[in-house]
Amino acid sequence: LNLETWRQLWRVLELSDIVLVIVDIRYAALMFPPSLHQFVTETLKKDMILVLNKIDLAPAPLVVAWTHYFLEKYPGLQVLQFTSFPGYNLRGKTQDKAGANIRRRKGRQRMAAEGAQKLFEACKNFTGGEVDLTSWQNKISEEMNLEDDSDDEKVEIEDTITVKKSDTGYEVHERFKGGMLTIGCVGQPNVGKSSLMNAIMGKKVVSVSRTPGHTKHFQTIHLTSNVRLCDCPGLVFPSKVPKTLQVLMGSYPIAQVREPFSSVQFLAERVDLVHLLRITHPESDTTWSAMDVCDGWAQKRGFHTARTARLDTYRAANNILQMALDGKIALCLRPPGYTHKKDIWATHKDVANILWIQASSTDALSPEAPHHFQDDFSSEEEPERETKPESEESGEGEADESEGEE
Image (tube, rainbow, N blue to C red; front, side, top):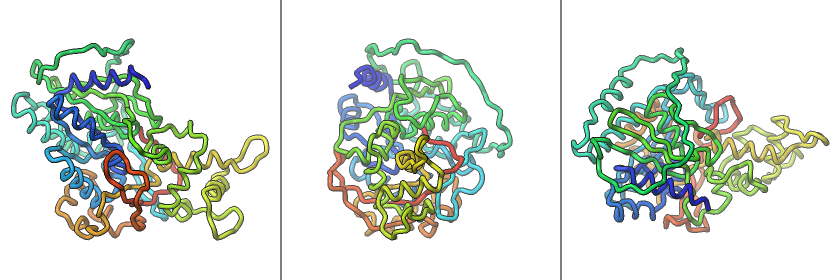
């Protein structure tokens, strides 16, 4: 247990006027800590916003279903949807022939103005006019009216501040001190906290990595002269989530997994990896195991051990898990009862709003799009969230040039 990291969490909670809890939409229920919600809202008496991030990796109806799930389970909780990679920040096709997600990012990332607008509106309601947010609104409006400049790949470099020692000393909180709105960003590793901050800013101001625990110290970024964001290191809150799911969620570093085949099996039981990866059985059999899937992928990608030139099954397994983490192979958990109301969610009025945030065409993520659905499943182990999530997967497959997530 790293006490220094937890001290930084308390520091961010003390400084913040509004706390953003950021979760990955694919594992929303498993990543939301009810104990933190209770502590922030009841003990600290502060406002909390739940941000369902990476909604570009899930169908719009599923995003709507998760939004209403949290609104019903936690009355008074503000729920927003966000993606750091709306359609205009990507280039080229977004899917291959097998239905695989391909996310090639443009050189210069624009502000995710749609998601930023929703966050601005929520913060404006919480502040009640006590903080002047005009400059933030103007910044968002300028981005929305900005013409596409995808060919502009200039890098903007600002002052770099080196933090030699974390400031974790206690400070009595004063709401909107000095007319400043402080927004704290909290969440588990790899949920996209740093990428969210970069997307709100419209430029890279926080370092990101696909490795869990990349952010070591909380970082303070000024969005405007009177709005600042605090990025807290990723924290894995205590829960009953099995290790196989922790690996797929990004809470556990893939490179440190000694036995990755259980996670590959969990994934293969719910996603048609054979079709998505377009692999053939190494022994020309019709029955597949997790090892066979990894051997088939190693054979296709040319992964061989250095000395004996045998198929490098372990490397292939890690590569498949990394693709799942990056969103090329997407496993999305469903809220309870989603299947019975699937038609209702597909035609819900909020679907259009989700597509607007994703900056996607109506056809891109419609229920008829090439996503792969299977029957629901119930997890045997009850997570801390008091819900047995059902599974929905949209297959994304072959390794590509697209970059990893934070």
